[in-house]
Image 1 (cartoon, rainbow, N blue to C red):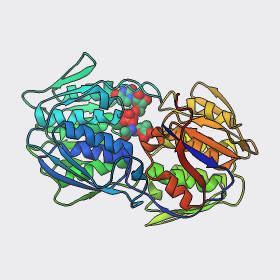
Image 2 (image 1 turned 135 degrees about the vertical axis):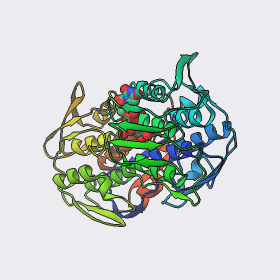
Image 3 (image 1 turned 45 degrees about the vertical axis):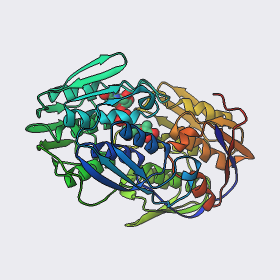
Image 4 (image 1 turned 45 degrees about the horizontal axis):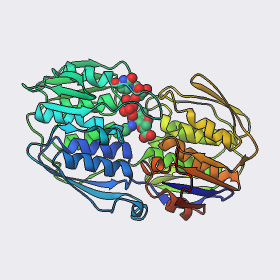
Length: 438
Ligand code: EPU
């Protein structure tokens, strides 16, 4: 077990590059299962979650090559991300076990592709995680609409469609990212037309549609709330490598870091169009944001002003940026209201922020954050990926040293965070945790 030791007080300045999005790369790896042969992905983040997904695919009989060594060395390497090659056999396995699924919830996204390709799949039920209860009802209802039979047995979701899947109409109760992806990845090989209404519109979904299209799938409406999928008999691997869409959550983190530290950071490869509300909020906080086609730059010369945020599905304000904005509001001038609509337990993080001196009160899914002049460094614990990033940013502006334990959470989602923050002038290091027990 390791922790990050962060010194407060540095002003971040310089340029970093953003890698491909975790939440796209993991799903693109599942998309590869839909065709026999070799799929090459570029810009893949060197993170623990990708290594776990690679392991899961290997257990399904795929050959997966990463161009980095799993473990601490993943910190070094191109900032833009790395290359990953997946070679899928004619008949991949159909079972994903609990030991991996519980460590990587995103592995539930192999359910749709395996069902479509093999007519059966048995995927461990992932269970809850630190950010709250996360249902699968929409995944299951949607796949059942395509003709699958799904039951829960001994901790597994057991799905079958021996005669193949058939297109159908699905109206999602909520634009769930995971349900949209699972249904989409099953529908591309179903007989006939599938319509998914109230579909998620995230840039990562558009990215998945782009790779599926290059493999021969017929999809209309990517990026809108209605996806129309014309099933085809077979997909083939994309003829050329696919570059993973840039990670808007990582880009957003550097934008908030620049604002909090009164810095000046250029985020090369950051897509301002994918962060519209977040960057607008930083402007309201007092930052200057300038974007062009190759990235954006955020600079700040004063204490930020508090901004209210409300998390919503894309294009609304991303829940994955909520802890970072809560950290910014904790040192801002004024009081703000932070409303979390997606994940019920994401406010657990605020208790850690309070250990650094933040003034926070929660009422259900609202938090009132009263900005204080200064935070005071202390030992804190990352409770999930985004909470971990929020605590690192808080540490950058707190007096003295902050240690953030349980960095395995941060390693799940941020490639080379220590190296990148150091290159911008931060004092941060990874060290063994003398008190590793949660
Ligand atoms: N939900 C249900 N039933 C379902 C599906 C979802 O009740 O069948 C609920 C969930 O419990 C949650 C809400 O709907 O309250 C949103 O869930 P959604 O399915 O949209 O999210 P997800 O697919 O589980 C992905 C990302 C999250 C990101 C959310 C929202 C991946 C691997 N995860 O989760 O990312 O916060 O979309 O944008 O893509 C992270 O990277 O730290 C992370 C948590």
